Length: 321
Ligand code: ADP
Ligand code: MG
Image 1 (tube, rainbow, N blue to C red):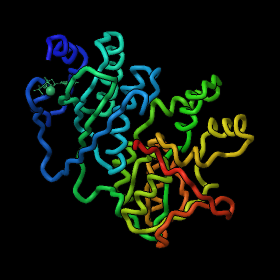
Image 2: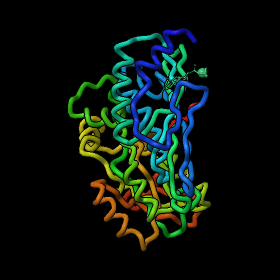
Image 3: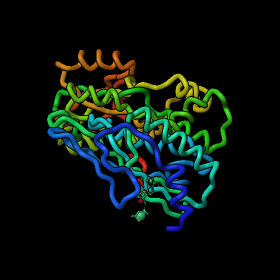
C-alpha cells in the first residue's frame, strides 16, 4: 500500500468514538472489540457498486448514507442494536473533494447511531463500497425469517414503492420537482433501527425489504414453511407515489413497480393477534407508520388480492445473475 493510501485512511476514515467496547480500532492487522457477556453478536455485510446499486451521478453523501443504511437495515430487521462497522472501499482515484463529502456524511451517521468504524480496506478500481455491520442483541429477542406462524398478521413500516419510482425518474430523465421525495427515498433509505430494537419484544419474524415485498415476504414464507394472503388495497403508498401514478400512469397503480423493484428498506414483520395493539402503540411512540397488509396462512403460497381479484407477479425482485 502506498503512503497516499495511508493518508486517505488517516484523513477520511478515522473517526472519534466513545464506545468502551472497542479496544483497538484501525492501525493494526485486526480491530479488537469486546462483546458484552450474555449478548449475541449479529453480523451482516452489503456491497454497493456504482451502476448496479446506485446510478453513476449519485452524490458522495448519498452513497455514504445509503451504504451505511442498507447494512443497518439488516440489523434492524433482526432487532439488533448497531455497534461496529468495517468499510472496504474501492476508489477509481483519490478525489479529495469526493472523499471529504463521503467522510462527513459517514461521520454524521456514525455519531447518530453510536457506531464505531473499527477498520477496513482501501483499494483502487471501479467505485465500490462494502460495509460489514455488527450489532448486539439479547439472546431471546431476535427476529428471524423462519419464525412466522399461521394466523400472524403481516405488517410493513412506512410506504412502499417510492424508491422504485425515484429510480425510474432518474433513468427516464423525468425532471418533475414533485417527485423529489421519491428520489430522496432511493438515495436516503431510513433503516428502522430504533423501531426494530423495540419490535423484537412483540414480533418473532421480520425482514427488511431490499428486493421488494414479493421477493422478501417470499423469503419469510419459504423459511417459515407457511403461506401469506396480501390485500393490495391495504399496501401503503406515499402522496408522491400516488401523484406519480396519477400523472404518469393514467391513475393506475403499477403494483409490479411497487412490490417487485425493491430498495425501500422498510421492514416487513409478522405479529401474533395478541400483540397487534402493543405493536401499534410502539409505532406511535416511534412516530412511524405501520400498516397491516395481510395474514400468514398455511397455504404454502403467497396470494395477492386486489378488490377480491387475484393478482400474479412475474418479477420477483432484482436478480444480479
Ligand atoms: P493490512 O494490510 O494489514 O490488511 P491495510 O493496510 O489494508 O491493513 O490497512 C491498514 C489499517 O487501516 C488497518 O487497521 C485497516 O483496518 C485500516 N483501514 C484500511 N482501510 C480502511 C477504511 N476504508 N476504513 C477504515 N479503516 C481502514
Ligand atoms: Mg488490507
